[in-house]
Length: 366
Image 1 (cartoon, one colour):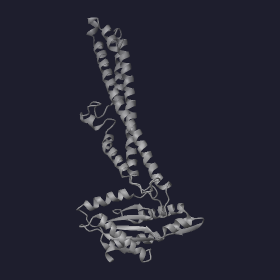
Image 2 (tube, helix red, strand yellow):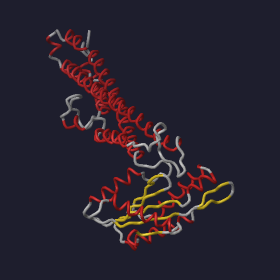
Image 3 (spheres, rainbow, N blue to C red):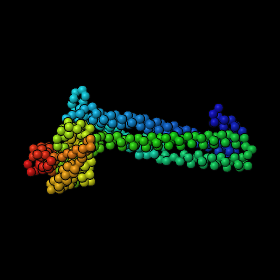
Image 4 (cartoon, rainbow, N blue to C red):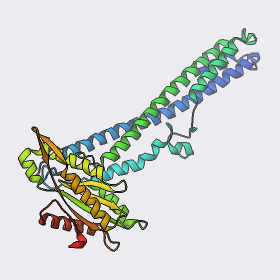
């Protein structure tokens, strides 16, 4: 016999049915039904977060594995390049990152509320119903406990046959409230973890794993944004290449080559301005986006980077290994695409190599 049937049996006597305690028992039964519905809804939401969390964990692990494979599987003469182990072509992971972006686009707004999705808050979600923005579940349990204590100590209800039934219903309500509170906290924990993993996944898709600089994808996004903006059309692109990097790999090993790339990445990070953007372009090449600068400022910045690169040292069996860089710069013109500006910078870099390396060349001077 369930609580409602038990209550109906006890209140068959009209005198008991009209008593204040009968009303309290009826309210307790209704409250229990309400909490059961809320528990079921929040459990479904929590299960959804848990499922998303597991899927995102798998995606992040796959992303890290792919980025690691790009470094560990293939070593080329010009450094590490992600090459397919079967077709030996440079891998294009654009489809993978597009799927990640699609996932984030669908789920990023879900983690903005507290255990309840925005559609539920707006009352437009047809799956889990409409829940309030905040549910003081713990307060409800304590309030019911206080009310039960007051009623059981009230001499008016001491001899009522319904007192035992009310105490049972009230105790069940409190237990259900605490359980609901616990599940809500678990759901919030899944929600927070999912948000952190989404951020980590987005960061991993735009970060070079070796140097911790931005990667080629992130740089292309930055260039597209800058080229499309009409507020600050003045920018420059500098292509930076380590001189004789193959010689470093051949003479000291790829591990030293990796350390050289990391050290140069640190030097670039330390010498660019806050408004600039630097990325590893591929192999031993780096690309620098110089924002809102004229040719004189760009050349001065690149010269500072060239000098900083000369100071880079990597330890090898007690000996300090150094390097130098060649830099080609190009000012962007509004009538050109940023791809054209990259080609101009690459042309200037080729000229810097032909001039003897360890120098800065502006495309406009060619």
